[in-house]
Image (cartoon, rainbow, N blue to C red; front, side, top):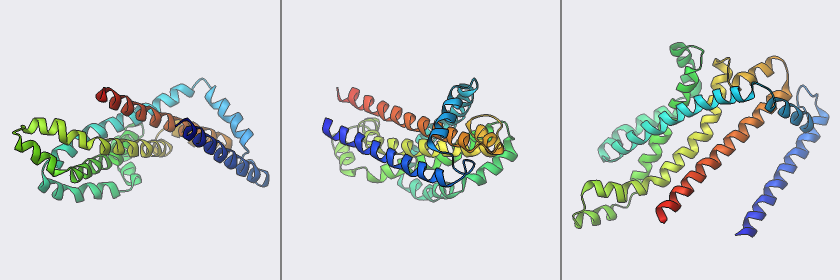
Length: 251
């Protein structure tokens, strides 16, 4: 096990060094305005992280992301379970959710800017609308994969519907629930930054816009690195929560 983890770590380090080397090579060819080098970007990243407004801007973005995701997870889980429990309802509503999923986030953003203005609500709305159908579709897929023989066996032993749901249905959906959260967290970071870039004067996206207007490419890359790290650590945190939940249930 340790050997596998060490090998994976070494592979990741090699990949990172390769990317930095290629990046550094191209930065010698192009102007710093087009592509600043790794050291210049590192200096800008340190400057961004050490600024007085850093935590404020990060908190604003995290707040918008969390509200949008939590609303999508909560409503998506409820709708997914309620609709998934009835096969006819699944067939009726499934195309609707796929249509919502196919709707470009930029379309939701334009509408949200008209409905909510430019003070942050539009960004929360598009995170919610982009995440909701993904959460529902994942849970509905989970219902399609439930082993009907387990449910029939439960009924044959006179197990009531509540116990069947608690002991068979919901545990069977756990993998799909986690998969849905994993997808929308990664997507949510992209959507929230896009929303802030186009519709807000605060948050990380707004800072990227300011850097672009000042033709400060290294600062754009610095904030991008910050977003990547925040998204990575959020995903690790979520994985840890599911792992702890699994171990507690197992014990």
